[in-house]
Image (cartoon, rainbow, N blue to C red):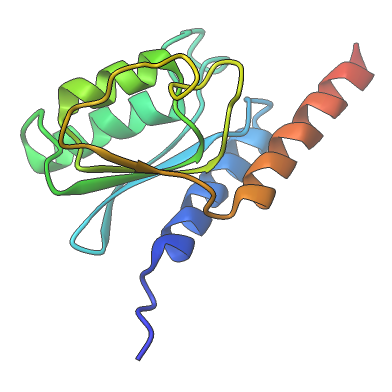
Length: 149
């Protein structure tokens, strides 16, 4: 029997969050944090809404998950995020000791992989889940932004 709660399922939930960001005029990046096949945090970019450069989807999700768990460490948790984390988010994920990071599309310019940002030694990272959808919503957002200006 196929597991209904696979990486594609949880990434689709992160994409729902990206769509909420898109509707608010935020850069459409979404994230969910999962433990034991249960979503314990949902978040999306809120940098414009909160007027805060640190209000990335991952940062919002880390805080929500830590509050849910009652502690700062996210051992046993998996982050699903629609784009590869930036240096700031990767640094926060390092300190959270999250077990796994699964992202949709790469960010060749600002992503943690090309910038060689260190993750916690026990953290696994994997990309390419719903990559096209994750990339498409960002492209559409920036095309519309350019056409408005």
